[in-house]
Image 1: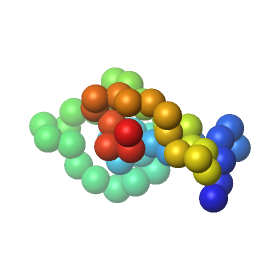
Image 2 (image 1 turned 90 degrees about the vertical axis):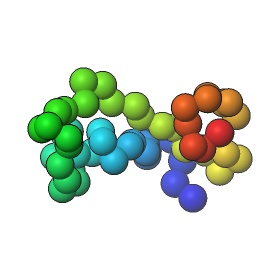
Image 3 (image 1 turned 120 degrees about the horizontal axis):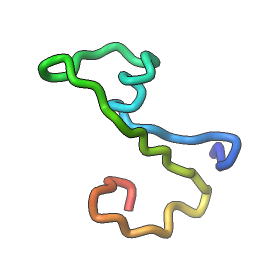
Image 4 (image 1 turned 180 degrees about the horizontal axis):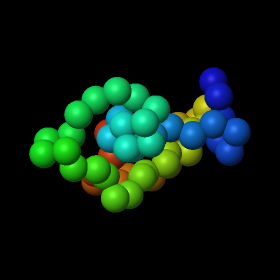
Length: 54
């Protein structure tokens, strides 16, 4: 597995905002922030309520 800090994960919305992925936002909106997720072989130890990885 690829580990941080060499590799990061980001949301699809962040990738679309940075023009790394194709897609359209509702009413042509853009995301004002980018969440970068660290990755480790042992998994994430966080328990963030909004995150699907926790």
